[in-house]
Length: 139
Image (cartoon, rainbow, N blue to C red; front, side, top):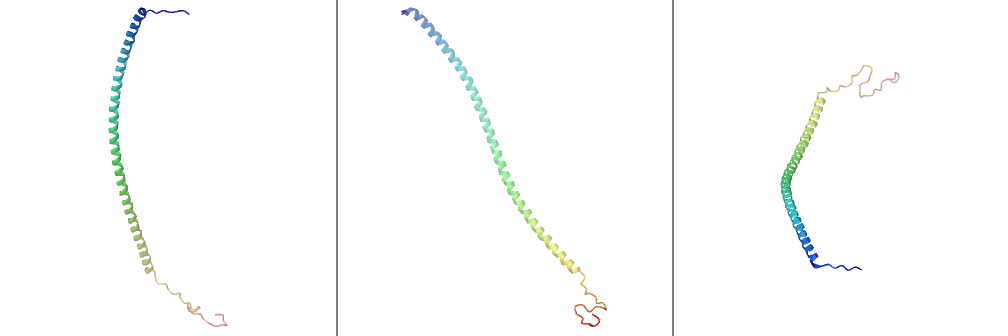
């Protein structure tokens, strides 16, 4: 096996340079992250404002829908009252028509000439009476 001897003087300069380089990298990364965080914060703020505007618009829509639903319920109630009024009117009209039909029948019956009794012919017996006539002649 080979022994490697590292002197402290050679490594100390390199370690300092590496530490400075690593610190510079970390500082640069921190600046990039800070800028990125600021951009994201601005985007988040814009998104929050947009969400707030959308929520306000939704609240207005919900209020309009609630008003529309109330108006629809009132219209349905009015339609029910109208339906009942139409049914009552139809019932009254049907009753009136039936009454007029009965009156018309009664007036037609009253206007009919009286039914005449069948006229008696000289060869026929009086209506309603049986004739015992002559058996010989078959009458």
